[in-house]
Image 1 (cartoon, rainbow, N blue to C red):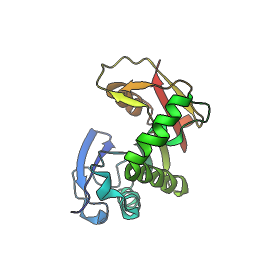
Image 2: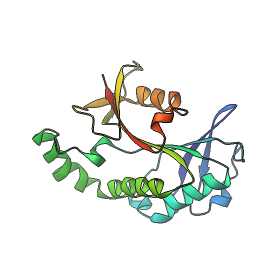
Image 3: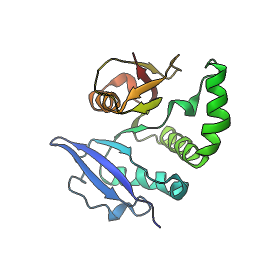
Length: 183
């Protein structure tokens, strides 16, 4: 089965969702895929077993370049860059249970971050939330740029979306990893 990616392309007229096959970026013909697309929010990668493939991320990068995208925001996980200062219980749970259980997904996220970091032609931001919840939008969250956020426990999906959409033009977040958590 071929991997499919949901790309939300932010244009001047709002967000448009595209279903693409990154291994064939030229096949993406969704409305809004043109040189005028300034932002790309990548997510919804589906089954990690199918996506443990370097072509996915390189294809996403190429698809964005073909569409004229320079700004990329993506979401990985706070536990991808777990701080050595995190509580022992949290480090054990993530290191011995969560990461091995979701090893393909973590490998995929790490690869995506490496590809973005090496992409000299993109203005990228990686946002690393902790455990996501279905809570309401509060607007009460804290962030840390290129450093670990102490005591990051959870964040509502609504607050994550709020941050992503309201920081697309934030110069401090360009080519940076942002850790975020509820306040």
